[in-house]
Image (cartoon, rainbow, N blue to C red):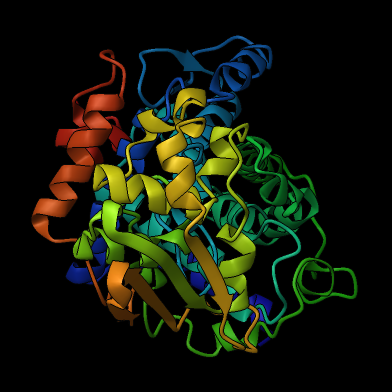
Amino acid sequence: MSATAHILAFAAAPHRLPASVRGDALRLLGDTLAVGAAGVGAPGEAAILAAARAMGSGSEARLIGSDERLPAAAAAFVNAYRIHCLEWDAVHEPAVVHAMSVVTAALGAVIDRRGGCDGDEALTALAVGVDVASGLGLAARSPLRFFRPATAGVVGGALAAARLIGAPLDHALGLAVASAAGTMQAHVEGLVTLPFQIANAARAALVAADLAKAGFPGPSDPLEGPFGYFPLFDEGDLPRYTSALGECWRISEISVKPYPSGRASHAALSALQALAPDPARLERIELACPPLIHRLVGRPYAATMTPAYARLCLPFLAALMLIDGTIDPRRFTPEGFADPALAALAAKVSLVPDGNEDLNALFPQCLTVVLEGGERIIRPIAATLGSPDNPLSPNQAAAKLALCRAIAPAGASPQIFDDPLAYFTGTP
């Protein structure tokens, strides 16, 4: 059996999630819906909503954080943008894939369109889609060229949606890869085009499942063929993922993001939050890190930067953490970026490549804080806060949920925060 056939068999199998995996899926679903509600009104969201409204009239599916309804594909488009636009959504770190975002948005729209869903059926489809999206990232050997959360996400989202509506999984897979798009250029430039690529992937995932259901064909070898996913998007070895398929659930490997910023910034930010050095005594901060960290968040501070750029700028984020003791998305404003106190602290932050030859590695990292008088605090970082090896405490998780609730519009359904599975499955 080919590696692709293994994935299709896994996506079709009548799984029963182990209790711990079901618990992880439910916890991550709640986190994803909460950050989606907080994303209402974020930069670029109004344009995304306007474009979605122009896709057609209808009331098939809800928009996270408001009482508006749109056709399912349009709702998936908006919801995925809202989930990713604050850079607060969960991520599979070794895969470098925000695996929850596309799958949750596509699956939620399908569930709404069919009028609801059993909770276990929904969580199983979610876990299957997240597994495949993460698995494609785990199989990759090349550095990020395309935006992997979108290119891998559309595949996981399409298989999850197809499983739920009874569409042929092989054609849904082929059509998803045919729809895959999104590059790292938007990341380099710090643009809201980045969450647009997640939005586009969620819409495409749902359309791929619907087309497969309608009998529309997809390529038969979309992952391993000569012009398939891996020859084009990522150099990789698919059996690296499929050889252990079903032995563990990748959704249990997902990391929650405590801060609304690029995940590559979180190791340093959590260390600074714990150390809480006095900004008035600070001489400099150095982060020794793999080249991927430098590439993702090592960009220079600029007073004219956009919020999307700032979420990926570790010097600014570190300065904000030093002054505020936290990262609040409401601080990403032109006034904040022009704050001379933040600029002065940001100038003291540097990232130092550590010579790691793994171009997909996020670790090891080591933070050095130098204070006046030459006092040095060295903090090796073994696991980022929010990862399975360093999970959020109950208080930290509650604080994130409370901040999301405070930022979300008043019209957001309380179920999103109080009973996310009931909200997701349309249960009164």
